[in-house]
Amino acid sequence: MAKVKPFRGIRPPKELIEKVASRPYDVLNSDEARAEAGDNEMSLYHIIKPEIDFPQGTDEHSPQVYDKAVENFRRFRDKGWLVQDPRERYYIYAQTMDGRTQYGIVVAANVHDYVNGVIKKHELTRRDKEDDRMLHVKVNNANIEPVFLAFPDNARLQKIIDTVSAGKPEYDFVAEDGFGHRFWIVDDPEMEAAITEEFARMPHLYIADGHHRSAAAARVGLEKAESDPSHTGDEEYNYFMAVAFPASHLRIIDYNRVVRDLNGLSAEEFLARLEKDFIVKDMGTEIYHPDRLHNFSLYLGGRWYSLTAREGRYNDADPIGVLDVTISSDLILRDILGITDLRSDKRIDFVGGIRGLGELKRRVDSGEMAMALALYPVSMKQLMDIADTGNIMPPKTTWFEPKLRSGLVIHSLD
Image: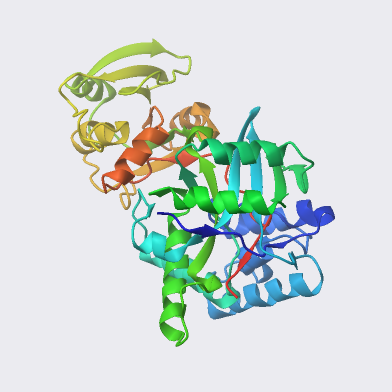
């Protein structure tokens, strides 16, 4: 059963929230972070992307960069840009995108739940990325950014979310990308107890986004436990910060593919090869969106095509085999285009659906890519089924939007 607790959040004063808060560290590169931070010395990028304080080209994994993160984190607290709450709290965090709002509960989740599989994952992690985030957590002795979790809908927790969010938020702002963010403090002992109790009844939580942050936090927690002779399991380092959302609140958007060449085939030959496994329809020059599972959108030679996988070409009883990312990877990318390793093949690139299908068209029309493939998005039920069966999703399957805003609250491991 899941073990969560409130924690003494380290947060910006409300008048500084828009200056401090930032996008997550992994959605932009160093130059983009440097540009976004500009002359704003309060930007969290100085902590999560501290290489921006060094000349362009500085190795973001060098010791001096991690040291700078520590220095900046200390400076933010010394200057009162980040202040720790006097007692442990839960928080409610709401995000609004395109008129749709999702509400999550900010908790300290248990490291050992991650290790023991109570917190389930659906993606593989890369060791180099784990190492980077582990070192960042370790040197700062804090989870600066949260993990994005999902849990099965729960009526009692939903009532708490509704009650708290009916009040005046501590933070309420719209970021530069147009997404709204609101944040409340849960200040009721009965609600706090109820949150802890309801999570303790849940057999599993699910990582939606933040697999590397979860793995890194777990490694730090286990290392600290091993080196602590008086370890009890209740220490703060046994927990990491997460925002947990009811599954029904979340929407996974499409994660699409663009390919540089047709593996020596002409456009006509490629379309003919597709006919074996798909019903192919020419949809003309107007953008075509996949409208259901096993339906794909292909952009090739200035035209859009509907591809519908023929029955018998996939296995609906297999939680991985039924995924459109598996069908397209096997029947198109592997069998026709010869792309077998999505993680390393330089002939393929991936485009989050937040950019729209117009971005796929642009990259093909520019001549950079030969074709684009848009997929119908994975559902939360599919994600949870895959995690429950101990399976791992293929690479580049899920894209969650909006991303959690960083800097609203930080969790100290002390």
